[in-house]
Length: 168
Image (cartoon, rainbow, N blue to C red; front, side, top):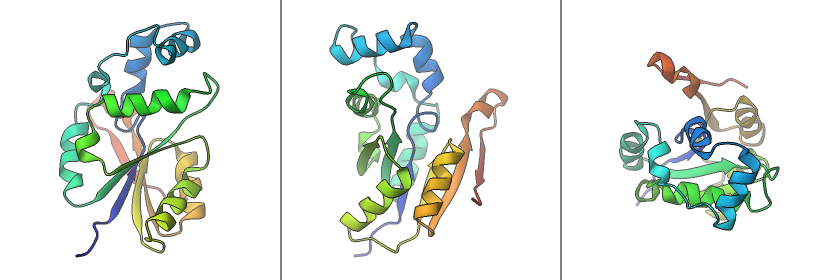
């Protein structure tokens, strides 16, 4: 039985409306973020922050691809930021459509290469969708067979998200 092709997907600003989440979180963001991590603030229903097309997209693409969420976090708010990121992803209701989750503080390209090695899929081409050109570039630098797609959700306000291949 052949394996489905891999699709690596960013989470924040690709599947999840991070700006809307930040509005809910309020200020001061760093302290409120830590309060969520510490359990002082109750976790919200993270599914309310998914973009409106996220579940339909994941449902469709999961039929044809192994879907891996590959999310980068900065430790500037808290050393527990990766834990909160996992809570956001799991709490958003996407798990039925996702085969694996990687949360990293490092290079997304290296994380994808490590994943492919560990799953004995080195040398395969795959698709990577992200909203951050720097992450797309690091992906292509490490994985020359990656098909990188830039998704600009800021354009959603016009009603038409921008997605285009990146030649980095």
